[in-house]
Length: 493
Image 1 (cartoon, helix red, strand yellow):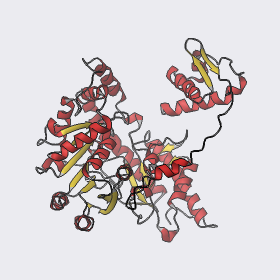
Image 2: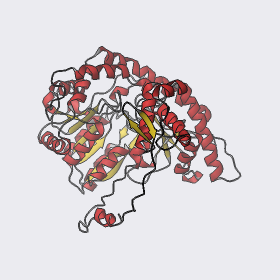
Image 3: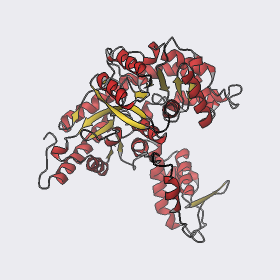
Image 4: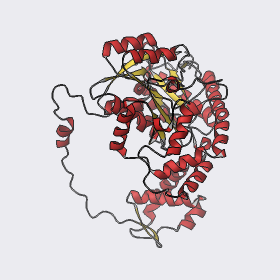
């Protein structure tokens, strides 16, 4: 069970028992709660802290926790309606809306209720994370000389050199900036390479976090369809001509959400088309360390064979290690690197040095190599478990491809002609006890059909995957019965 789930369950139990205590009365000691609920001291401490944050208990160091007194009186509600005018702004007739929609990102970040299986997750399950190696790296980092001093704004030289070696032999540490994870790197690249109001070409479908970052920067995402071999070059060239865009964002390896790998023939074509348009290619190489053990040799990054600085490369440790290891890299050449550096300094100064030191310790340890050797087989086993379960329980949901990397499957639901409501399916799944990511946020324009994305990397293992698919079948039957009253459809129809 997740530590988060254990804390939530204990907090619920304690919350339901608070009525037994008078206001100001002391609650049982941590030792008593540990023995009674058979929970760890850390779990008890976090559950009590959660109730304290809610204002239900008060903790006093050395004395314990006490039921809080009710507030003396609620403050009168203020009038915040004026903010609607201020936030909408004037900006003139050409101004773009300033609303930022983070719903697509929150769909994979929000923790579902206790007991719900997380097929919506975007990170490795705790059992797949190198937690002991991370803890050891953090401990060693804290003992490094100067670990808490200010780091160079570009990042620690040894960490930049490590990323440069990983990306390709033609790059050096001087070509790399350390960022606070991949999302921060994408946001920096978009702000640096395109002015507000400009179009930016994106794959369709694509990662919602990038779409949100583009819109937050005042950019206009323009979709370019993806097929089995990746982004389509003829449509990419047409989109550059039609829009005058100067930036393309793509994921050539195990694309999110389709799992597509840009074909060998198309790789130089994409870079050539962008170069002729005077445009940059932002290469989001997020899944390179999430390869499965049946993938075969991987193509190198686009940035590794790009002497002209067309490609701006994004890489991160987060996906393969932990969602809290917010350490990534931007690699670029020429004046673009100076622009990226300036934007990053203005927005965040630098990535905290202890985190960078921990990353250096992690990637240089034997435990990291062991983790990367073990992870491919674990991911393939979960992928196989999910594809097998889906083929048996839900053959009516079309799986476009079985990816050889990444941590998710992309499923197309029967289209509008079948009356399928994507949002109804997502809601039914949650009622059945399984959270899935809706497909709509992955499209920057109208989607061709309803989809859902299922993560096999964010769950404990094959047993939990089988149970999650069983619940998903229940949700599918409920959805079909609601859309077609009087008819309870079999999943294959």
